Amino acid sequence: MDSLGIGISTGVFSRKTQMYMKYFVKKMGLTEVDAIILINVKENPGIIQDQIGHNLSVDNAMVARSLKRMEADGLLKRVIDENNQRTKKVYIEPLGDKTVTQIVDAMSYWDSLIVDGLSEKEKGTLVSALAFLKQRAEKINVNDVLAARDKLE
Image 1 (cartoon, rainbow, N blue to C red):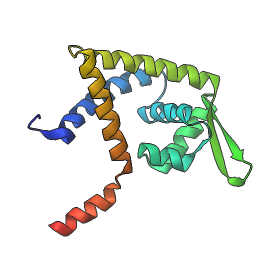
Image 2: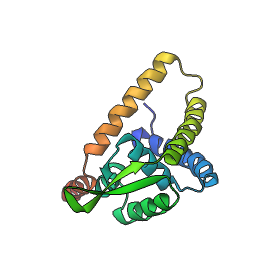
Image 3: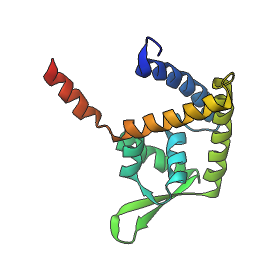
């Protein structure tokens, strides 16, 4: 394994990926947060704002601003929940769907550059391993981990 470890290695990869994504989505009039929220809404029709923030580890105020801006731009819509008038469910609009397709296409190109030189088997292993790490990371409460580490010191 790389002497830097998984965290630092994925951090470098993540920052480079963010640089690419930021450039691409900025040309579309979006922020990186807008882009990942839009993708999350497409993957989870009817999702509520709090769940978006939780899924993406994004502050709820930032999610609210992004949703408001993208709703005004016709990318998505918020619908009041019949069972809870204080809750709005979020759905993608056709323009948002088209935008997600453009983002995914751009990121697929980036992915192809990153995995260039790997065999198909290695690519499959990488995709599976990253999916596993993503699921593990989503289940971990970082504040709990930090508190536990502080007790050890």
